[in-house]
Amino acid sequence: MAKVAREMVERAGIDVDKLVELLIKNAAAELTTYYYYTILRANLVGLEGETIKEIAEVARIEDRNHFEALVPRIYELGGKLPDDMKEFHDVSACPPAKLPENPDAKSILKVLVEAERCAVRGYTQICNMTAGKDHRTYDLALAILNEEIEHESWFSEFLGEGPSGHFMRRGETSPFVSKFLK
Amino acid sequence: MHAFTLSELEKYDGKNGRRAYIGYKGRVYDVTDSFLWKNGVHQALHQAGKDLTREIKNAPHGEEFLKKFPIVGYLLDDKH
Ligand code: HEM
Image (cartoon, rainbow over all chains, first blue to last red; front, side, top):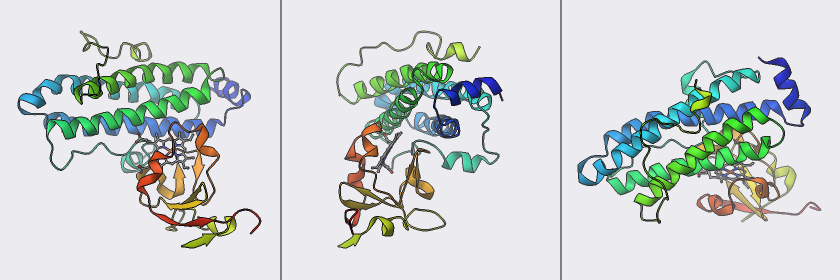
């Protein structure tokens, strides 16, 4: 634990235990999403599915990156990951992004966009809680939020909700979060 | 439909197998089956068994998510 770092956050008026719990829940959401997206990606087949497969893969890898980036902050603030992975799954801040019953491209896209929307809500909350108080968690949550918003806009574009305003990533993944992974 | 006092609502806190009910704008919703209300706790910040009408204004969503949960009663005001 980074004792003074935690103390600074406490002194800024944040309930650090609750914040840590929320970070653990969002870390669980990222890792479980990575897992469920693996299944979703495998089922993106055929002409329509193949169109989306690559971009779903980028979201999958970036969600795993978010998990990796969150973990150090959890420990710095005195938290820890649960010993039991089943417990970790069940504390997730978002519902499981399970393969739909009829896994055509459209229904898979709906699962993907809902998962991203849940994440956008979660990191907006963490940003709101930490803004001007816990600079390091805020910086991290904002970086993740930037990527989650891009994921949401990619998938919503495929669902016909309007242009995302983005291109697919070229080369490196996680343009915002990579600084926390080095 | 059942009328809940606030102290009666408190019993439905989602702990130890008890059901998780929440009060919202005079109605009582049963969120026991929600993945996001396990043990009556939501996002580490909110507890079932309470009137959460005011708390939603700081949430990253509106009341739309409540719609899919059954209404099990209504909430009497504090005087009861
Ligand atoms: C700061 C406070 C809150 C946070 C951070 C929060 C966060 C969330 C998130 C991330 C979701 C998932 C949304 C999605 O799938 O896109 C959710 C769902 C939900 N929230 Fe909240 N929420 C808060 C407060 C509240 C309050 C006060 C209530 C009740 C009055 C509430 C009731 C619900 C319900 C019923 C759901 C749907 C659960 C389900 O689908 O199983 N939330 N919330």
